[in-house]
Length: 98
Image (tube, rainbow, N blue to C red):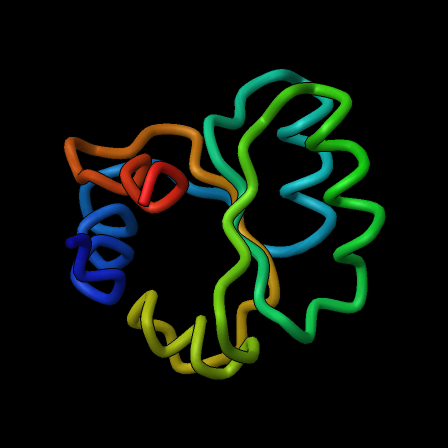
């Protein structure tokens, strides 16, 4: 079983991510993204999911809102969506398998 909170914090510290709708979409279009994580209240979720599916990028639906996702990432603000470019040795890709 994957500890989501710990995995997200490890990815932020050791890996490379892009936070926010604009940066996520730009990274997807460049082909840099390994995984997209979306909060359940993301205002651009449909657009991001469509772009991700076209590029065959896995999507993880975070089962809470942007405030909780930001907190899980160790941020003091809400994060509605972010893209994982490099997992930094974390097991974040296990989220989509489990």
